[in-house]
Length: 262
Image 1 (cartoon, rainbow, N blue to C red):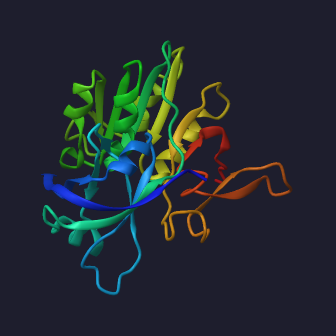
Image 2 (cartoon, one colour; image 1 turned 180 degrees about the vertical axis):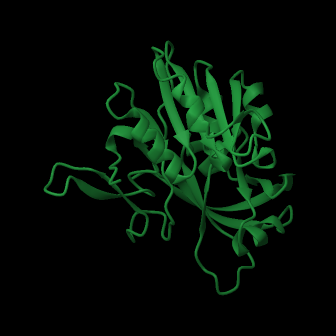
């Protein structure tokens, strides 16, 4: 299990960046120092009444001065309350949790495929990469695209796909990834809806390429105790699979570990 901390963290900025997307910055020195690309934090949101469970969020960025940043989308009661919290308010944060992406080394060209706000999970990976490559960003439409400029400022070549064709390629972002699979020296990463991660897994079956993919399941405890966020992985048993916890053994899994039952 990874090392983690519980920290009372002050909000220093909580702002809307686009549509329903927000960025929140916490002064969170201990967790920020430990955080690695692909990990997440479990946030106890203030003013939630009887709703006691923490909410998991991918770590978007950390700074040398102890600031930990999250990108989130307002989709329900919890994130709605979170969007209304003011600078100076305190949230209890548990983290960093889960495993992490491996950092590309010299000679490896990263190809990062991100869907929706899965782009937040892979930003720290791109920031820490020793080599620059491509980021393939996918969304339902142009209004759902985020972080395009941020990845470009890191030196990555950004290509866009939207389901409705309102920006970039018209179609699925996995269609863009297919163009690069025959290239040598690439290292593939992905984060987005699980259906997208399974699609990438299926694409790589029978090839020599292995991707690192972040799979998300509904989390309760966040520390591996409740087994509420399991996914199927390949195993050498009669069934051919077993369960692993996305909060603990994940959320990042290698594509050849992921069990496909369809």
